[in-house]
Length: 486
Ligand code: NAD
Image (cartoon, rainbow, N blue to C red):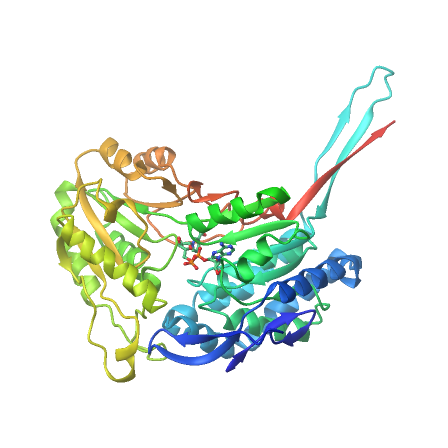
């Protein structure tokens, strides 16, 4: 796929303006395709197609028919697994060992899980006493919200986009998706799967482009969109709210994080080291749930740090299709510059660089890619910018602590509240600490262990609302109460 087009009303179309932008492989820095950039016109056509589809055959399907179609979409992704895998890895550079276990299977599962869930969701019913003694019956009915704008990021492109599109369609909505400009491929490929599965035209639409003054802003300010679901940076979420405020529409936001891990002296050290290595370095550190602050109880600090360092130094950076590769590049040159600016700042702020801190020498054509070393620091103040701000790279700061209270206080001292990991074999402590941490998702003795029925989302600056399981219903449906006087 060298020319990546929009997908509007069941057809692949180019931009009327002829505007395109390059699609770059971050592992090599080389251009591998061109992407059409949507103007106001394409966005408007996509929203109109989505509106028409709501009123068309899609809106008239029974729940069972709709769910059967979504199962076909999941099967369609799995049937073209290798194509999705290659497309995702070319866009992101991530190793196939990761994408084949996480991104693509979850992309398919997101359709099945919500289709199955929606078949069995109850609604509420209340009897009301009335003065005449006859009473009244109230019951709630859930209706689709309408046309949903889906704006998604580049770090887990198919997974995070379908995490929104799956429940949106299961609830009977139609969508217009604006994938990240860095990762247009799998969202576009999904258009073919939608057509093959028999999803009616206009139900799933894709427009490509950037954020401000481009497809992202045109879509989120479009007056005929009923809800905006967005995953990305906190400041982008703020910009979307400001720009779309006049339209008074629902938003669901999954935003940034600066997630802590709390490692207690009574932990299982093997599991804690392995889990922290994954949480800090998986996907080259570009996971919203990833750990960038590690707090370790003083008696095991030196041993833990030594083992974490050894694990980081064993990471194999390389091509996506090399079975030995455990870490790919950062998403772009621009992001590499941002991450390296934090590597420099860490030293300026007084960090000890335990390992990494720069860029690796990569062989052959990989020399042109956005590669960075996995990095561990110690010795920073809790007020340092490197400890306070989301970096979104393969790096973490490791800090000792002396008491449970101190660890909790440092973990909560952030404007973010997305996820936290706690490593302890003490059950009482696990419950106590989990209860006090200010984050939407707490893992005890694990990380990224996801049950898709559970609530997913962040507190404080990490988001608005929850997705997952029945919680997705709160955003993707409107509940209508019917009151019948008996
Ligand atoms: P980003 O905010 O730069 O971009 C996300 C999307 O928003 C892209 O499609 C982009 O084109 C679009 N966009 C940018 N400006 C816009 C505007 N003004 N109006 C409308 N759309 C606009 O985020 P990113 O760099 O792609 O992703 C990384 C960020 O996402 C990190 O902060 C990470 O923590 C966060 N994230 C959060 C979660 C979560 O579940 N909480 C998951 C993944 C990533």
